[in-house]
Length: 114
Length: 113
Image (cartoon, each protein chain N blue to C red):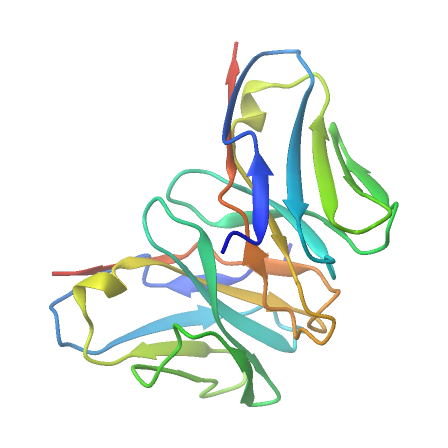
């Protein structure tokens, strides 16, 4: 069964460093998303991406964050100048057609900023 | 502000018992998603409901969306230890949404053997 994959499963970085989180969405899906979940809190939407551009983003997704689809299979989230409060589980998700379609999540990358 | 309320926050049931988890919004839900999450892991898709009055079932889990599309319930029949986990409801609250979902805080389910 097709699934969303994410690497790495756990990333530890020092404050101020840049990290890139990687995702491989399900192959025939066209909409891609990043969410985050700070420990003990709700899952929060960060950004959606369609047709090689951002379609929606939340207030959390500021200039510190960027997304890219560098090739036909990968979808990345870059976090520049990481802060302690960026420590969270980051989930990638994909959907065949966006709203009103099933949205599948990856296993997540746990980011720890020290 | 709390846009999706889940109740109860946690639930402990004896194996074999039925249970219901609720998800309520003050706004119309344009797509209601149910996921299961084990602590520290990813979200496993369970079901998606769109139309008012819609009901879907998979194995022993049934989800319903009310006619007004502001409340959904997830019902588990004859619970098993494998049903234990955190159940999350997520929803699009905007008719023009590209699929960005708002989530509730989750309901932690424990099933005693």
